[in-house]
Image 1 (cartoon, protein in one colour):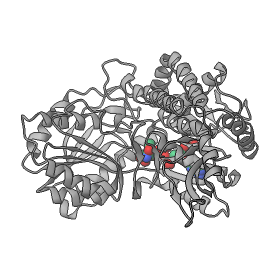
Image 2 (spheres, protein in one colour):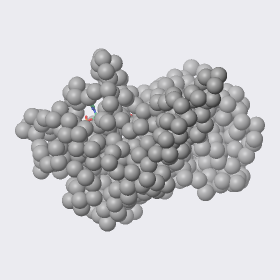
Image 3 (cartoon, protein in one colour):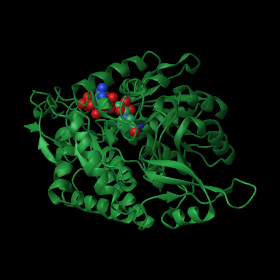
Image 4 (cartoon, helix red, strand yellow):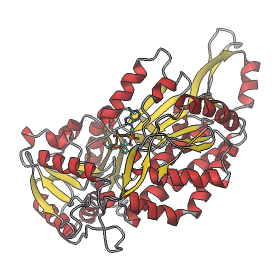
Length: 517
Ligand code: NAP
């Protein structure tokens, strides 16, 4: 099957063979995606005109209603998506739910945010400044929608959520989306867009889809366009260089890889409620989506006295985990997305083993040797003074490393060695530990999750990205920022200081919605 792209409001496919999408359990080819000969420039131009015209004639509330319509279509077809996620991504139902339900939830959240903004099409920040001696000249900050296209390049691990979280923000901001899923798992993205197009809930030009290579896309973009990229730091660098070479460059935001951490506080002991919560979260990191989450815990800082007990508790959980075909309901951990990812994960585990030893490892399934399976593996790095690979190497699979620390200052200093990450979690009831972590590691992370006895199990999970909160991180994580509620609109809108007299400004203010982005 040739996976068609949706460009200029029609389904088209390239003239070449393209790349194969496979079932990671069996290696069977499911589809091919190719963009040879497709006119990218014309497709982007179509979205820029038809899509901008359609979306920017709608109010925020109407754009919210549009997203709600998309979410309803997806909800109706959910069962088909679970099946595609199993076949093309090797997802169990729980894994697929994070991606599919996460995407629908994010769309609904942004639908509500759009509706809460009402009939306006531009935003104004609260507060004004008097600029001249006489009270006749003031300034206020306004936000208007950029008349461009939002090119959205996604990683293979979230063909649904990764796509919809970007579409949701752009749509409310009034900017059409040009979606480019990772080729290896594009089947789910393509089926979802097809269902939405068939349902007729989105005006022409608002959604475009490119299945296959996007090489050359930067050449088609101008000052009012944008690229929201999620993927590896290496591809992010390529795009950075291409964008930097343009005189009037598109905006670029990058969500790249990171070696996220969790800290089990020095106050946590065996028998304390937080002990079990931290063990559960660590086990989740080694099982959910076979560890293929960008926000996943890769380093686990545990006080050295607690390490043996903590390791035993995680090892107990891993011993009960079944790795295998996600078609089997008893399977907890499916394969990685393909053999290339398996080989890379195994090679990277090998590099970590030069600094760390294996504490626990699940068994691999028998009879499925040709599948892309990697055993959930817990490592321990004992010689922290000389270790660097554990802070540098992201194993994009079910592997994490315990780092025994002496005191909180040491854990914080080591936490920074990953050079900037997406997410950190802390399990502690000690207010001084919380404050030290907040001040010491806040600047190095886009999101910090503090779990104490009051929160207990009632949290959303270290790796789960909530649309209300910032997603992104400094340094190696790409320096980008997405989501964060309405603040996610900032990337697609222009903030301008408008200077003028009180009558002109109050006239503009009456036509806009006051909110602080
Ligand atoms: P990748 O190889 O960098 O690919 C990411 C996307 O970029 C794919 O859609 C790919 O298309 C596209 N691409 C590659 N070269 C391109 C070019 N020259 N121009 C335009 N697009 C290009 O990353 P991946 O292997 O899919 O994803 C795994 C990585 O993503 C992991 O390191 C993970 O940490 C990171 N990730 C980060 C986040 C986050 O939010 N920070 C979320 C998920 C994953 P093709 O597939 O067609 O090559």
